[in-house]
Length: 275
Image 1: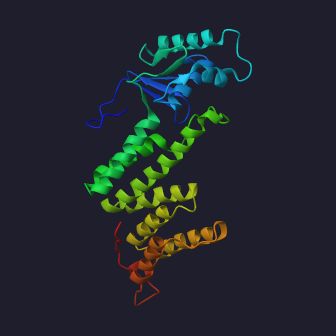
Image 2: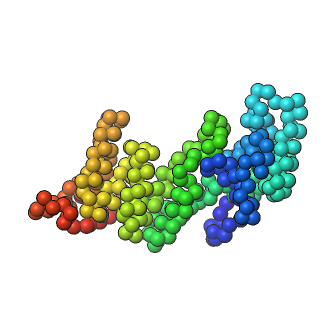
Image 3: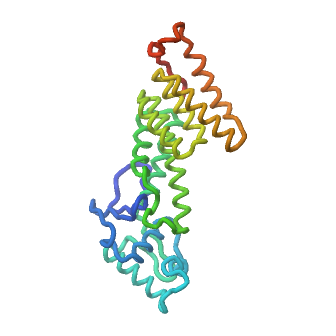
């Protein structure tokens, strides 16, 4: 895991966002360079279970399903040995009947989680918005736009990591948007909230931030259209109205933009709502 005192990179990182790859001593190792298909699957399984031992029986089930080889435990041990030979002896610790990644090995999804948490901590503590924006953008660069282990699209054992990825991706986008509004980068806030709402049209936090971003650039029609899409989606899918906080932002947009000459909206003042 990333140190809480420093962002200094450690030598080896297993990347599971996108397709499986490894960064070791600044070298990208991917595909067959890591090992056989089963060796890569084993490494991916260990990365998904980052802090937990994976029992050999579980690895055998993932690797061979209902048709394991006669000496399945030995086969798993052989795969572990080959991975250590390619990636270093520290990459996997343990021995039969259980293995896990070594303590010094980072996983990109775990790095992203730390960055998202740090961005949110900056927001809670009201430290410099630029610091929050930096952390959230770094997380977003890790997470967006790929899914976890795209080369294992039907593997059920990947589902927990995919769920974590979706949650972190949403939080990173919200973090970027919130910090971007505070630093005055309203267009960036619009871009990331558009992506958030594309992923989940019922995301009220993203809707509020998007309305604020359009409010700040004197584009009330777009802010109001954003609200209306959310309202309609909530009514159709859940039979509910937007939350009070969302309605409050909508009302602020309506109140702030009441120019005397309604034929010249380009002359409406730029104002900002409290994030």
